[in-house]
Image 1 (cartoon, rainbow, N blue to C red):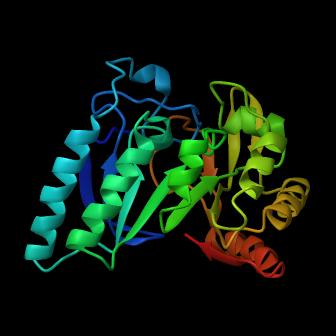
Image 2: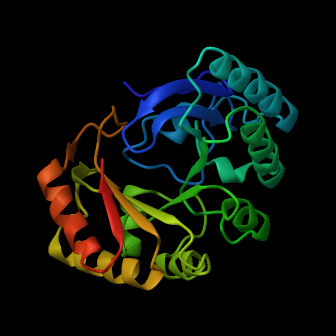
Length: 256
């Protein structure tokens, strides 16, 4: 069963990819707000959460993060990472850059060894303020699930104008200071076959990874409930085989 995050700060949780992760949700608590409507999203379909679409206020985010970090440090369990995720796309927040500034200040104050990570679908990286903010965090983790527009339309269901070519050009503008994250899955959706693990898909994706030249790639598959019930998880050995092809390009690749 898919579910929403019910607070601004959530966790900490043990992340498969990031360690002890304290989550930050900039999106509505009682609703989902995203520029994608992925068929695998653990928060469910956008249309299933038509409640108030109001971003959490910068001041509230800072106050709750300050309080939570102070408590975790006092308890001897500081987070390994502060992760922006939550009920949709965090970089859509109009104050995203200022919130990152607040977060880095609070991180340095309470838990200077903690990393700051952002999980993003890369739909807002045309905005200069978003790019500036992402270049300041330790891990800006940007999504690219396929090299083909038709696959992206099927799997990610962008809610606005999106092309792989434009996204790749913007990803290249980070000069390697980014992590590309890709969800591999297969199954069916609305009578159409879904599979971005085919040789055609993987080969084309690898070419884009080579062009983007990120400092790291993360490949993963389904681990939680999805709104589309006819999807299948890709097993670790298959993901590792894809990771080996990434590493043959001289790029570090983790499997989760």
